[in-house]
Length: 137
Image (cartoon, rainbow, N blue to C red; front, side, top):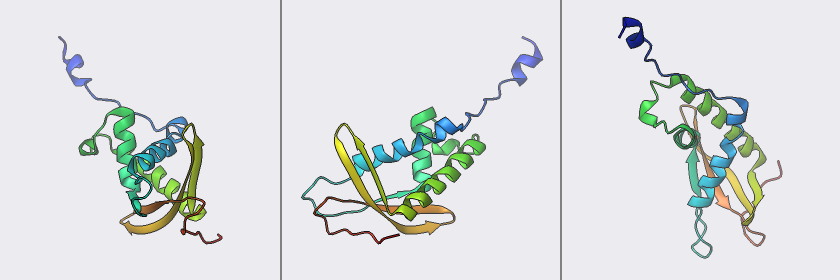
């Protein structure tokens, strides 16, 4: 083996293309569906931080763990930035809703906290008869 084969063992970082970034809301929806409490168990908020969503997305998409953040610095930075933008969008709307094969899903959104740029949102399941109301924004 030549010396040049040993020096080219650098791992290329995955790219956060527009189509990749467009699939982040699906990761959030999956997380909300898995985390929401069954009906009749009381109203509880699901708290999700923008960094946690980014970590979940990167792990599910590329199998890269948060402990590898230094190695994939640019990937984590760009995905986390996009998750913050997405969270701010949902916060301004005050809700997230979608329809899939299992029906219509509607969650109220509120700001729980923000720590060093990590935006933490609360998501509350909304039903037509629910007491949860959203301000007109």
